[in-house]
Length: 159
Image (tube, rainbow, N blue to C red; front, side, top):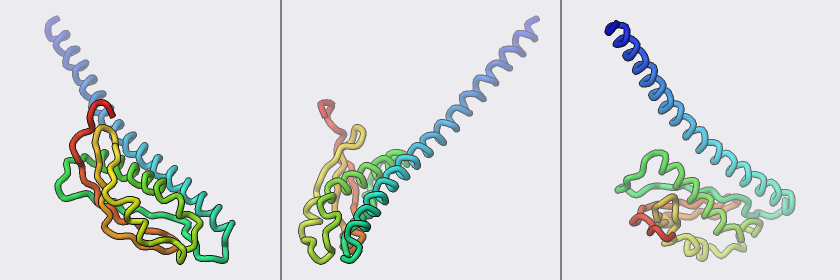
């Protein structure tokens, strides 16, 4: 009788540990798919805006897109998931800040103003404060913004 109970206990523990491992593996896949989904939705919105602007002013060289290239400072303690979430949030913030230049002619844009809009800004992502530093900006039909991200102290509880 004791052997039977011992065998059943071992069997149940095996099932529980297998189910736990499966849950962890599937959870990480769901996280990755969620980030990819958010990224693709953001790209789709950006492309729709670009198409609308190209339909409005097809003859001029106009700014129709903003590409953001996020680099992380050498010393950071971000997980891969946090890096993905931070990169998405930084891209969204930069697109929102540069919204006024969409549709303007490339030659008409004040090229000195764009870095000042972004440089030394801080945003909150999750429970962290992130500092942005502009490395380089290329202005053409597609504005390419190269940003370095650095973590500041954790956000205060009131934010």
